[in-house]
Length: 307
Image (spheres, one colour):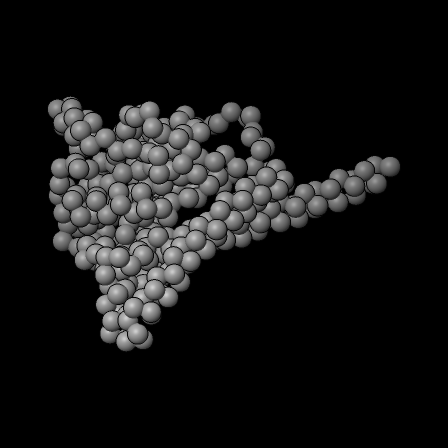
């Protein structure tokens, strides 16, 4: 893991990311499609509760990358060497977390959980992961989120407890704000973009996107059902061996042989996230349909008036 960072007195509650660092993340994730990739975030955690991300760099392709987010590989030796060279040229080299691309909102996975747990325990409790979805962005919905493990999930993971936790409380989302230097902001205000417009965002077809989401959700539900079968089987075995003794049953669930609850909790959290995404997408699709209907009525009225 990368070297320790300078720690503020309290926990950070929001993330500010420099525009150049954000563009590097977006460029890396888009160019690597269809593979999922990751990289490192550099910056500083401030006493004001803000985590400033001023620089980012990609991790090298290990040859194992694929469309599955869990295929992404973090090369710690490369991270350390890259940070050493950045320090030599007087660039921010405090590691404050990592970033990764995600496929249609898939982030609640054991790999992401383990990597983030490693960063928050070995590096800093304020370390975050920036997740960017290039496919949703290409579909007209810019998707960039910052997460960290909640205090409850972090403590439960450290102690190795197999307790129940509300699925939505595993990851804690932090608000992200893109910031730019004053000169950059002034240039953007004075800059006139080209007149070529990307009209793909006005596409009213929602069927391919929803079909893919429903297909993936069916897969998550099947995995959740398989996890539930493991719990049911273990519960029956435990009831037989304990003879109905509540103390023995509680001890059985605390043993290392009991199935891990975290797997099913992550699946439940991902299914809930998919439901939220589909709700947002269908709402946007209905808005586009109403807009298109209004334009058609206006065109029809104009045509009738000219006739």
